[in-house]
Amino acid sequence: MRRQDHMQTKQIISRRSFLQGMAAAAALQQRSTPTCFGAPTPTSSREKLFILAYSQVKLTGGPLRSQLDRIHASYQSLDENRLLKVYRQRAGLPAPGEDMGGWYDAEGFGPGQVLGQIISGLARLYNATGDPATQAKVQRLVKGFAATVDADDYWYPSMKASTACAAYTLDKMLVGLLDAGQFAGVPAALDIARRCVKGSIRYLPPRAYERFEAPKQAVYDETYTLPENLFYMWEVSKDQTYRELAKRYLMDGTYFDPLSRGENVLPGLHAYSHVNALCSAARAYLVLGEIKYLEAIRNAWDMIEEAQSFASGGWGPNEEFVTPNRGLLGESLTKTHAHFETPCGSYAHFKLARYLLRFTGEARYGDSLERVLYNTILGIKDPRGDGHVFYYSDYHPSTQKAYMQDKWPCCSGTTPQVVADYAISTYFWSEDGIWVNLLTPSEVSWRVHGVPAKLIQTTTYPESDSAELRVEVAAPSEFSVYVRMPGWLKSPAQVAVNGKAIAVTTEPRTFAAIRRRWQTNDTVQIRLPFSFWVQPVDDQHPNMVALMWGPLMLVALDPSLELPKDSIATSPEGLRASPYSPLTFEVSRKADKLPFVPFYRVRDEVYTTYIQQKPA
Image (cartoon, rainbow, N blue to C red; front, side, top):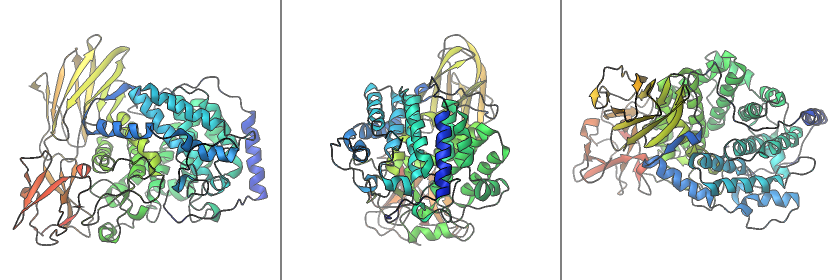
């Protein structure tokens, strides 16, 4: 959601749209409530790979687990009375606790908008960690929210919320309630979600609107992101109402149809929300099977990767997609400090990458997920606990990481969601084996034709370039272990089984397939040799480059703020590893050495991402 000046809004509902909404609400009331709230079974013929449950993957160490633990603790400690206060105030209930402030308050930019996302993130974190205190917190938040829903199913925290951002707030509340039921054992959550949809119908437009055509009181509402979670609601409820409602808000004419034909309609669009909308197209392909939605997301992905992305994998300076081939990414380096809306953008990017991995089995989507992970979201500053969170990645010269000035923006909601999603981004499964997408200390449990199996990964990646996978099976079993071979490889990967090198195809941007009859304690050794390389910011600025070490974007640390612009003789070969600190590299200057470190390891230091490389 774009950060803009707060708008004063009034409820403006035409007689026609009001009657349409009431008719739809009546239709919803006539549907019976499902008696169970079980997880959907992944049996779609449109999937080559399948997603695992959070509970099947355990992160056991490394920087991903360390960040997950910190984020988990931060959100677990949030005051529940404060989170529920704006909802209780509107319902006329006792509302103890201080106001949340910022975007969250009744007249804020997005009243109460992140409550659903916080519930979602905590539900996922519970499922990933098994922490009973987190489950109990989710249950209390859902119960507390349910008590604020009126008899006529009005549930928004304020009139502003239901007029200025009705779709946006519904979308976030739906994912929170559905995740609470799916992952945290709150069966009542589905019925509450049904009531929220009924209470929203009268405030929703008849179709998805782009911002330029939306009613002026709801110009920043994101109706076009609704289908993903409405399809999700259909999957768990089996109520066709939500499937049809999801179809109503698919933005075919102005977005998915032209993208499916290869027409680039991205320039000028709000970046994060339109990548999020692509996830609705992905869910539509999964549910409806219409090939145009797959073509749309594949084409859009290529457009973003080829002409919209920084070396980090992030995109959308000033939250907009740029016009390609005009050097606008390079120009943005000195014109803004808002280069990538990091938690929100990473969340949407991860989701879309996982959909595409599931549909295609192509490793290149895992490559991009890894790049965004290490070079954006893993590098955010930890939330302060008072509503101030990291929002933008900044690639301006001589800058520092910072918190957003406003409290409780949209990124405060996606932060726990995307970090929880590390688990389900690490491995996938198929009928013939297990797929290793990320190298990180972890364990994954699944079944091979009914036989329990576990893969235990030991590594210090990305401080090192190697990992070991150890198999545990209840009985000897034949299956494949697939390991992603990243596109940044410049030297051949090395793969061994039980310490002996094997002949296996390790072409970059593929999955290496290791098939055998596995026994407990069989091991696979993997080495992905890191090397230095450079990534120009765009074709119009070929010598303005970021330095890369394997998957990692390196930034220059220069407390003196005197980074040479044109005179530094920087090339990948000029970097030397520091003997004193892992993942620290140095370039010699006339009087000293200039250190480079991965973006994710920067805390409060002054840094520069792109440097001017001397032409060859």
